Image (cartoon, rainbow over all chains, first blue to last red; front, top):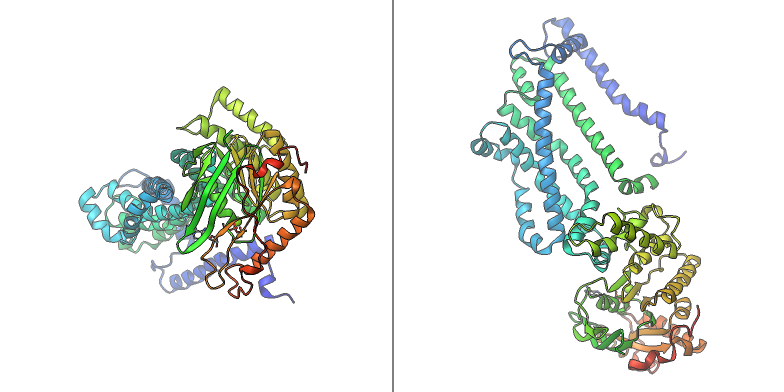
Length: 274
Length: 295
Ligand SMILES: Nc1ncnc2c1ncn2[C@@H]1O[C@H](COP(=O)(O)OP(=O)(O)OP(=O)(O)O)[C@@H](O)[C@H]1O
Ligand SMILES: [Mg+2]
């Protein structure tokens, strides 16, 4: 028999294996929920799938009595907007400074230690300062996300720029490139797919900061809702919200991956050959 | 006529280590210099000095009578063994890049008629190196030999005054390498180039050029292997070099390889070396002009 490290599942088998843990969780949940509800029909901890379904359809279709908005969509829009702004600004900062620090030794000497220190500050510890300085509105939430992930992206991209083969930069100089042109036409296009990679890696952190900020000071948003209904032990709202956030995170990641494949085929060519 | 490249008493040291010493050389426009020497003796360093990537510790290099600018520029083309092409650009765009960078200092892109002209020029150059069928391919989709053809086209489209090749075909299969040598020979003749090519493949590389430069240590101190650098021990017009000379050079190079600093037991001292032929100076290449050799 072959060594286990050499045994590979076929495509279909791999898919089934991948689904298995999900199915198991659902089954375990169903049993546990059923057991608790038989013991106490008013139990709120593990609502049945029927209750969950009802709540989801209410959240997703019926306007709330208080505000007249459909809460799930309103929360989703608010959260995604904050997330997109925060991540977008962080990506822009990361790209700009990553390329500059990677390409210009003087700037790197001046700024790299500073960026490294910035990235060591725990962003959540800054949240009170952000609230004091920027108020409780949208700005402080976006700034928290930016502060939380931009230093990582800057450092990652700087690293990628420095990893470009020396030969390429010399070649570009023999092709009459000046510093600006080399950054624009040689370095920048080659780190764009790296930027997407870095953003994908930092999305988890971005969600963390978003939900933390929403939990503390907000009037709408996915994080806000979860922490609001916690008071009523409304697991039938919390669980679908968590699943929904997970799905959104998954789709964002998938979307970025596809975008990268679409825009930078030369970058992904290697993976396919390998 | 001033020489294309004039090197006067060139030294290069890295800290304690002397890599190159006392190099005097004059290379006329149109010369094709093949450079050979033991591994680690300083051939690449020499090329980097010509390129302007490194500056001499002592001495000077003149390009057409003017001191060399101290950084790489469009008057000197280079092809490395690897990584000379840009992976994010198609073959055509790779070759157009130089024309675009030269024509548009700010955006680095050409538009309209200028762009079409650059495109045509680049396509013609790719045709000349045998890549006419692969204009839209990305480097990743090209074989090693094709990538080096692309790198050549990329440099040649700029019409550099000297073309530097650092073991450009060292990573290729012998058969393909022979083709590539043919190609370089043809491009050299057709484009009026002045070429410096480092090669490990003495037999093939040698027939290609007009001039063979052998780098080796002139002096050797077994107790301090880093104290002396390499100089040009042979500077032969290729037409005059016969088979015996060639064999002697090969034997020398491989002996130096064994003597290299990393092998501490450098038991053979300098007296076992053959008398080094001093560099012949400005007229060294006089015996072999273009056309004197056909590869
Ligand atoms: N930037 C540097 N700093 C210090 N030492 C260097 C540097 N560049 C080269 N050297 C040293 O100079 C010597 C010559 O190196 P070089 O790369 O020129 O050799 P080479 O003849 O091209 O060898 P090979 O045939 O293996 O390519 C080596 O001993 C190397 O360690
Ligand atoms: Mg070398």
